[in-house]
Image 1 (cartoon, rainbow, N blue to C red):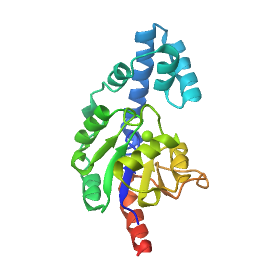
Image 2 (cartoon, protein in one colour; image 1 turned 90 degrees about the vertical axis):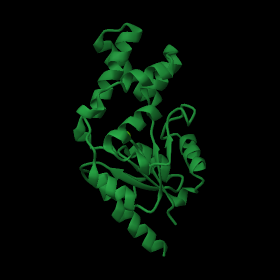
Image 3 (cartoon, rainbow, N blue to C red; image 1 turned 45 degrees about the vertical axis):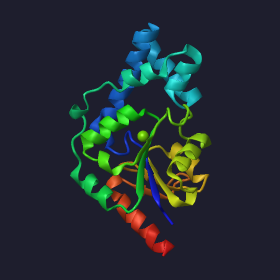
Image 4 (tube, rainbow, N blue to C red; image 1 turned 60 degrees about the vertical axis):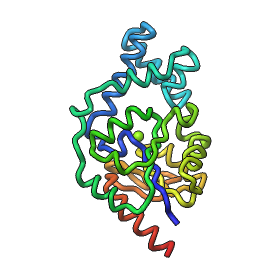
Length: 217
Ligand SMILES: [Mg+2]
């Protein structure tokens, strides 16, 4: 029976239409320009290379450039959130009704997650924030990251539902037996493997959880 929700943060808990995630991307490029002294074009290229090779730009910068992850995380998330996000009353209501323990599970850091949740007016619903530091810099979709999340919540994979906007993250969780929900405005064609449900908006999660709980009887 479902007991817990693991929920991604960026582009999942708020809509991609907010523009926040591309703004973070521009901060990542700016960080590489500032700290490594590259021109913007080379910084973009390096960012793409590291993302491809490591699955997360930060890991490439730590491994190949020895950057301080705390310096990076503070810099890339230093954005005026009120310009991107507003309190979400409908999401607040849905989370209040959802009969599960709720945790944020993000490859960003907890400080950014805290600020986003406060800006959306939904901080009170989440008992835990499992961030990239909590997993020892092992990001989703590495199996180790999910193991940390499940242990932290004290639940088994089959007691957990996970919502994320990236199919690759969901596939990693599905392989362990976690129920997976793909949150993105639209999907072309059939769902990729490793995804149990698709919803265009996180506010649709309530119906899926209710169905699963009813099935479990
Ligand atoms: Mg995301």
